[in-house]
Amino acid sequence: GSRIAFTSYREENDENAEIYVMNADGTNQRNLTNDSTRDYFPTWSPDGSKIAFASCRGGSEEIYVMNADGTNQRNLTNNPGWDSFPAWSPDGSQIVFESSRDGNGEIYVMNADGTNQRRLTDTFGNEGASYWSPDGRQIVFDSSRDGNSEIYVMNADGTNQRNLTNNPGSDGSPAWSPDGSQIVFGSGESGSLKIYVMNADGSNIRKFDFYGTPHDWSF
Image (tube, rainbow, N blue to C red):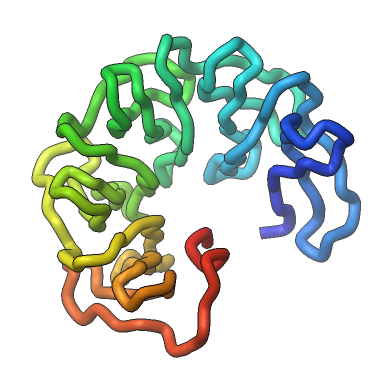
């Protein structure tokens, strides 16, 4: 909790996103990547020693990992499709991510060193925004498999996939509460994007009472 990793387009080339890190109070901002293409979506390993991220430096979007100081940057995936949105398992042994290698966006998981890559979802829709539950037993994600984006959850091995929301608007970008009892997500059900929260089993869905903007979708 002492540092924040983030993506910045602060260089002259707006297409050249880089990853930066700073202290939690905003001091000591420093650049970790320096490539001619985009580096983005940084995510900390649970012990804070590494950062996984997506990069287009090899010609297609792939998952990379580096030490928290930016050293030892190395490629974990290498596919003709794109691989993106990495998220660590709570014990740091695995990374879940989204990939289009089989034609549409599906959720995959791999060991933290890039080995044993395997697909967890297989539908005609697009699956993404996947995050591990704090106990490491489940993965929450959004999916358009039923025609519009809804929130789903599955066991960490991909079994027991089940729908948690069913709304005419789009539900996406889910995230767990620290104790794993609740899930927060963005929804366009009310005509504009708002933030909702529900129990981890999909019950007791309720909206946060404030006026949001489209920017509230990302949290």
